[in-house]
Image 1 (cartoon, helix red, strand yellow):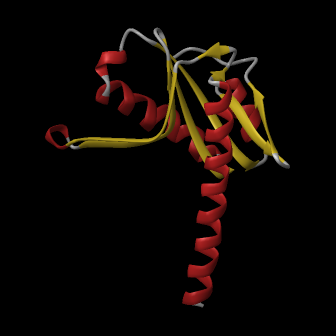
Image 2 (cartoon, rainbow, N blue to C red; image 1 turned 60 degrees about the vertical axis):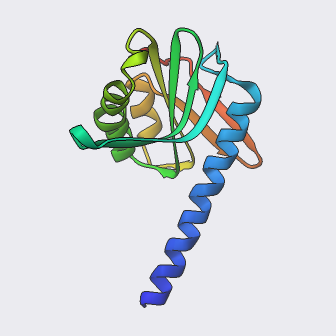
Length: 147
């Protein structure tokens, strides 16, 4: 059973990496999210401040002169991921990168699948949706808001 669990976990990790790769490549190619053109697209941005015991990793960060886009990628997007972005990732980003305090921030979440009602929850909270559909990446950002 232990080996089966390990193998299934490995498959899940591989699927998550594939989702992140597809989403990053689409964003990096267009350099656009939510109708906003960005200058830079970075992935797996990790930062740690030992002094205040704060560390975070951001899957995709896009920036231009006045806006930051924080994009979280998952294999299967769940409600807890929406909560984590708003309650953990966003505040951590603001504390770790005060140089961007005067920037507007938009948020996106992407994945290969979404739990029931999670897309609606994200849209309701002003978070853009990125879905992998077949071999394409689709964006739903009409209701995106600034944080």
